Length: 380
Ligand SMILES: Nc1nc2c(c(=O)[nH]1)N[C@H]1C(S)=C(S)[C@@H](COP(=O)(O)O)O[C@H]1N2
Ligand SMILES: [Mo]
Image (cartoon, rainbow, N blue to C red; front, side, top):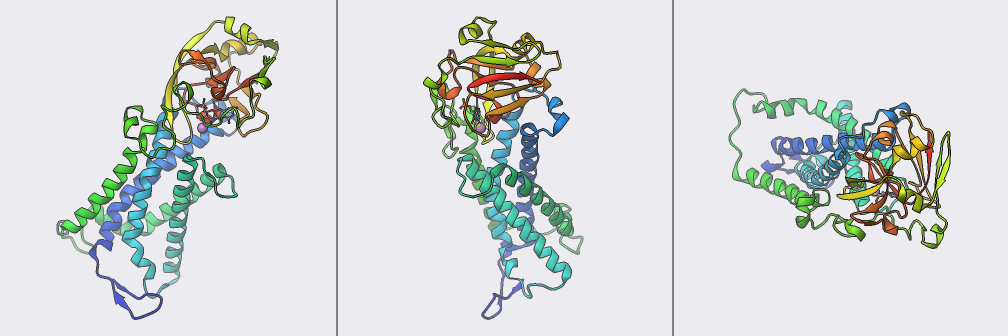
């Protein structure tokens, strides 16, 4: 490839490793990671913000569903970081191609690559920092990460369309323009690709333990190790951060609103029929862990308030302010026998940080919707 830097004499870029084959081999791995990340991210968004009537169609099974898909979302996004770095390294000489613009078509092509790269970096950086709950920016994470995800997917499709001839040559293992098979890859390319694969494998192995419990001992960089925290479970928002104190809970009652509204003390709740379920708490930030929960079935509480079999419900926390103070659950969740208003965790009374005196635990549900410090249920 003949190249000219922005200033200075023209130079010829000869390194073979920056050729189309390297770009395509790394690109297909990166593309796979990005597509998996996008699909699981959309699913997560849908579960958290179901549009209108769809709320009742969301399934509460399999109970481990969200744990799996969100674990995959964060793992594929994490693996995409070294892959994107390698891909950019493979193609960066093109940034200095001369002349910078050859035609309108070429200009549009370069513009689409600029959008692709910018959106990709934005998604991976904001996603990574979100797993650390670090938000050094002024915009709101969820809408921005969601919108740029679509932008990235659009730019990726355009890129695949533009690069299609090269991708096809790669998969049919044909050198461009000929029917001959290319020579086998030399040791330099094999080394490069092995290093990229090792890098992606290493970051995955050292973070995925946050959601895959058996790999927990390998976890080095996952921000929240699921084994740490009171009662064997991490805490995202502490009672102190939510300004919930033992004093503020004196006189706590559970109010259930519906056709036959009623109020229960904690003692009365404890005298109701108790159930035990083993369900994961799966945080949208990627960590998840399974626990034993005991408490009263939400559907029993709703039925006592005169709710019909198709009822949905709204859950209100006593927390004074916070994005997750009020949540809603569709029919499948509200009626699932595994959905509890939990009073106990792993054989103990819920700790204040885990939502004492009562919290929601439901199957196949994002952690953000497992409302803590519940004070009120409303039949919808
Ligand atoms: N009222 C209330 N409930 C909440 C939250 C919150 O901020 N306020 N955070 C949620 C989030 S993001 C998660 S992951 C889980 C974590 O539960 P844990 O702290 O018991 O592990 O609680 C959820 N319940
Ligand atoms: Mo969370």
